[in-house]
Amino acid sequence: MQSLISNFHIQSIIFVIVLGFFIWYAFSIIYHFIRFGIGITTKILALIFFIGSLFLFTTSILMYSQIDWLGIIKSIFNNFKNY
Image 1 (tube, rainbow, N blue to C red):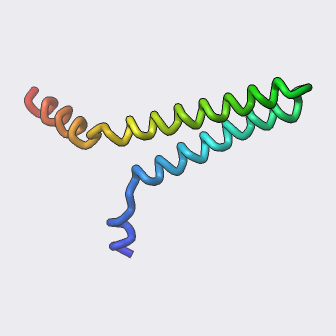
Image 2 (cartoon, rainbow, N blue to C red):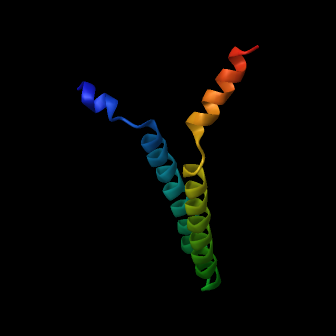
Image 3 (spheres, helix red, strand yellow):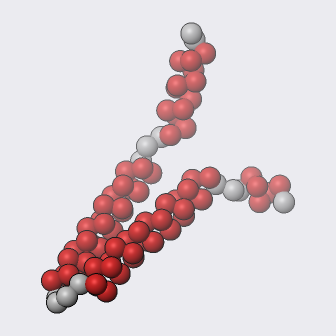
């Protein structure tokens, strides 16, 4: 049990939660565009929205993964200790 807890990554859980929220949000918007839209224009808008939101989500996740969060937190606490 201890090895399971030590291998437990909070970043992975946060990623899964954010991904689930994104999928639910995008699905609900696309569903309402397609279900209540008349004609093909709303379906094209739903496709454009989905592609754009997927692109922006992927970009934000890649940018988030490039930040050294632990280093930032350590530097904040080191500066706080000096005061």
